[in-house]
Length: 159
Image 1 (cartoon, rainbow, N blue to C red):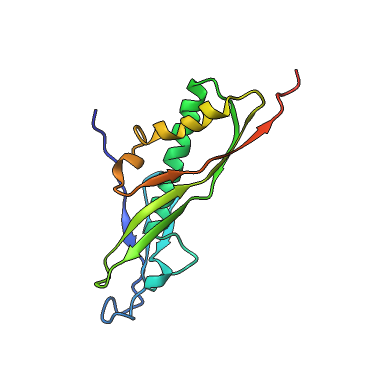
Image 2 (spheres, rainbow, N blue to C red):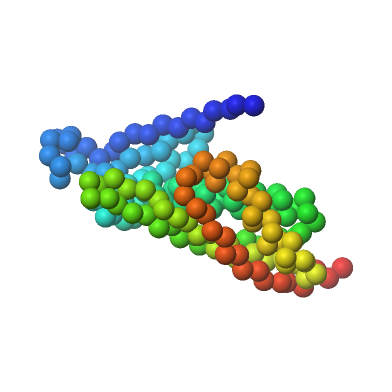
């Protein structure tokens, strides 16, 4: 079954003279999708962007991590594994070639997952290696994604 996604990107970096010179415009834009909050973005700071705004690389890495998390929670639930907290601080490595073209060459997802006492950690870890088969974003990238999960065990809730 096919389905589509829609977005609207609007450049906000015209400082009054458009792109009349390389330094005359800002590398900023908004992502505006009907019914959702606007996301203010900029280029990577290495390329003249605003370091206080999300850039395409931030968004791709965050999307990869979020997709992985959502599938992890789904598959953990199906496996009878109760996750009570999940956070990730992923890291991606990119390269820029002599002509300026760039690409991601790898990403490491480092989720910190809290599960209930009695959880089979081997089974909880194995789920990570199944997600790349189903995650929309992970299946769409052409660089390796490595998983380095850390688990914390929390006591079962009192009755």
